[in-house]
Image (cartoon, rainbow, N blue to C red; front, side, top):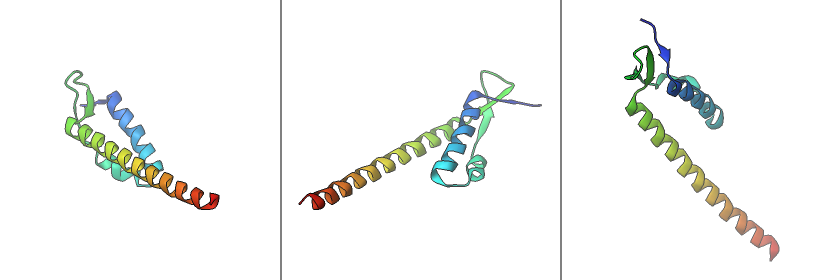
Length: 87
């Protein structure tokens, strides 16, 4: 039996490419982590396992939190540096 990829799977592949480029990680490692199930709405398609999709969502939230923390840290450092030069 052959299967098609659902749009969710195709979008995850695009995300993996973007994550590999932005984070400097091996995209093949991220691809090996993908988990698929038969799409309940289309028996000829495979879609993301709901548990896997939830873990990816949590991972993205973590990345955003880390990015926001780094941005705040850089802004605080930048403000301190600017203040020193002004005085």
